[in-house]
Every structure is written in C-alpha cells, then in structure tokens.
Image (cartoon, rainbow, N blue to C red; front, side, top):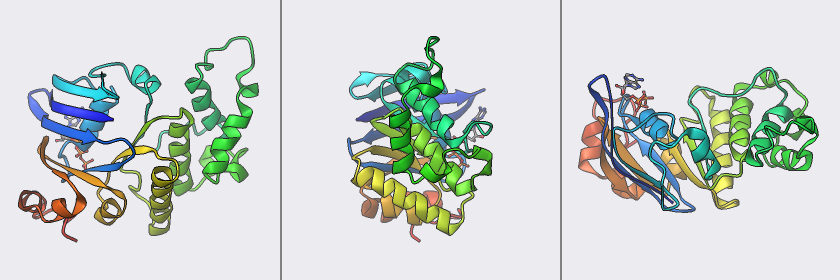
Length: 249
Ligand SMILES: Nc1ncnc2c1ncn2[C@@H]1O[C@H](COP(=O)(O)OP(=O)(O)OP(=O)(O)O)[C@@H](O)[C@H]1O
C-alpha cells in the first residue's frame, strides 16, 4: 500500500533522513522504531507531505505522492495523528469529528447549508465506534489526556482513510490509557481491516501490535522484517545499545 524508496532529507546540511526504505503491505500494522533522533517523525512528515523530500520516492496505492501537499495526500486516503495532541479544544467532541467527516465529503466549504446540520448520522457513527458518544457535547478540553488521544484518532478516521499513521500514540500516557490505545489499534486493524503505520518507543506495545517492524538509525533503514527477526538482529541490537529502550526487552 505504501512504499518509501531511498528517501533523503537534510536540515541545513544535517542529514536527518539519509536512506529510508519502507514497505507497508495492505491490512498490516507496521511499526517504525529507532533511538531518539533517528528520524521517525521526520519520515512521517515526509510521507504525509508536511515536509518536502530532497530525493527519493514515496508511493501510495502505486501512485507517486512525493512532495504533494498534505491535503492532497489526505484526499488520497491517508490520515495521521500527531505526537502532540492536535484537536480544536474550543470545539465540542462532536464538532471536532464532524469537521473531519465534512472534509472527507469536501463539504467543509459548503456555503449554503450550516455545516452543523450536515452528516450528523455519519459523525455519530464514528463517535459510537470510539466509545465517545457519551462525551459528544463536551468541550474537548474537558476530556482526559487518554480520551483526547482517542478523539484525535477518531478525527483522523473521520476522513475514512485506507492508511492511518500514528506518531507515538501513547507518549505521556498512563498504563491504563496505553492499554486502551493498544486495544483500539488491534480493533482497527483486525475488525476494520485498516492499514496502520506507527512510531512508538514502547517496545512492549510495538511487539504486541506490529506484524512488521522497520528500524531507522541515523536516518537510514537498517532492518525491516518480522518482529522476531528484528528482535534477534545484531545491527538492531547495536543501534539500541546504551539507549533507554532496549529492543530485546
Ligand atoms: N525542522 C528541523 N530542523 C532541523 N533539524 C531537525 C528538524 N526536525 C528534526 N530535526 C533533526 O533531525 C533529527 C531527527 O529528528 P526526528 O524528530 O525525526 O527524530 P525521531 O526519531 O522522531 O526522534 P524522537 O524519537 O526523539 O521523537 C534530529 O537530530 C532532529 O534534531
């Protein structure tokens, strides 16, 4: 579904992505792991068009999407959540999800009908599937951190994507909130057949949810394969030596 080939990106001469290669098969959960500063967020920003690549290729559903604008990539069926929660905190839970459902149907610029009257059943359906129906009229700022993250994923899915990118979805979460996100990822993958690309420092989570793992080190893909192969890979173990997150744990 997604192929990244020989991708490169430098910031003022610093090669943040030096040679990234990644293949995400349809229907799988694929994790990108790597020590701090390996280039995981930069890679995500390149894939979603939030950064421009210097060279290399990104193909989504066999179509070249390298350096397209983020909204064009989104309309092709890719959605993401960010490392820091990215919701409109002054809007209600319902309004946040409705905004993304409207965008999917390209009704966010409909000047003739008040947008709050559009696509109500579809918005309610998304809220229900995420267990957020009871909170629909609440201001987002009143939600717990964990529920805000669930809401952010619900917003991303409001656009009915084929591929969902999750950038460190459990950063800063309690173990209970983390469990909720793990269950959500499994549900979206197993029940809804969604393809998911995730970056995460929590190795327990990665080995629990991912069918395939790609390891990034100093901007280069150093390994890509089944979780067990990655766990036993010597270069991966070396890349993690001295790091807080030991891949063998
Ligand atoms: N806009 C930027 N300008 C300059 N350098 C940047 C920029 N964005 C990232 N970098 C650098 O690129 C490298 C990779 O950063 P990136 O955030 O992609 O790593 P990461 O693997 O996501 O790290 P972490 O796990 O800590 O989130 C780092 O050295 C970072 O300082």
